[in-house]
Amino acid sequence: MSPGPLATGRLTILLAAVLWSTNGVFIKEIDADATSITFFRCFFAAIFLVPLVRLRNAPRPFDVVIGVGLFAALLWLFVSSTKETSAANAIFLQYTAPFYVIALAPVLLRERLRGIDLAALVICLTGVVILFAGNAGSGDLTGMIMGLGSGLFFGLYMMWLRRMKYANSVLLTFIHCGAVALIFAFVPGVWDVSGRDAALLALMAAVQFAIPYTLFAHGLHTVASTEASLIALVEPVLNPIWVVLIIGEIPTLATAIGGAVIIVGLILRYTLFARWSPGTISEPGTVPEQLSDGPLPEG
Image 1 (cartoon, one colour):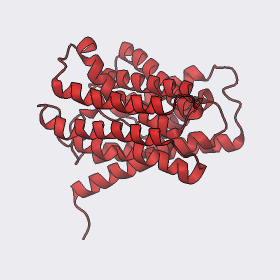
Image 2 (cartoon, one colour; image 1 turned 45 degrees about the vertical axis):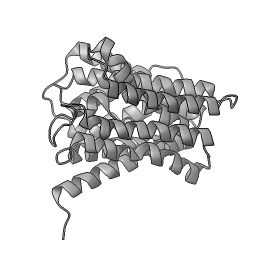
Image 3 (tube, rainbow, N blue to C red; image 1 turned 120 degrees about the vertical axis):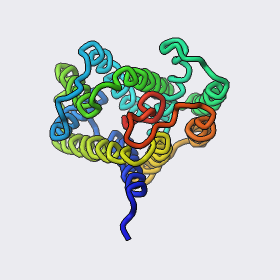
Image 4 (cartoon, rainbow, N blue to C red; image 1 turned 30 degrees about the horizontal axis):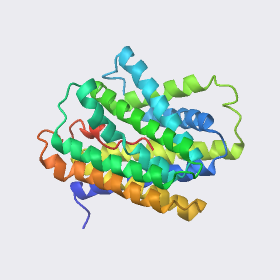
């Protein structure tokens, strides 16, 4: 008996999350610096997305310019963070993005901060404090600050995507990847990568971006976005596990505890807290609400 549409949708989203979780291994394995990785990743991703692009519902130029700036910042900061600190620190700190949305929404979106949002924010901040306190003096401070920065820009990018929800998502992603690649192409030394790194970067763009993005979009046709956000939390859990198994990088106890606290905060945000927040759960096939306040396929 073949699985039904809902089960198939869940499996495709789970597979997408598993593929996204390989980003730490790729970044650690590639010798090129963060700028070259960001450039080639976007360059190859744009190429792989070409067959999926449809020229309809194009984003407005002003929205594109701001979106590209936020996208470039979050990508470069995340790759830099993964290079400078453990992959576990980098991914857990990037997944603080939804909590930046909660904190900044009253100022930037004129949305009221509710008690349940504040509770989720406190849980997240507790995890961040544990991460930083437990890794103090480890030499990872720069990378961890970059990780916080990637989470901040990821949150800002999610809020900007809310503004651009009128646009075709595949076309928007293609434009953002292509524009970031074009900007970084003029950075001195960005093309100086080995043949091995170039091959890994092409593989990374396909396995860790284009393919899972397509799978995730397909899964959202049958799976509600809140459930999809929960399934996507497999990414920050598996990311450090792959790095331990393949690279041999073992996170500290503080990283494991702090990361677990952040993940728990996210789970509560999309389950218990979501039930108390009318209008936050999208139905399958609609524009996913998690584009504005939940995990996204950055990787």
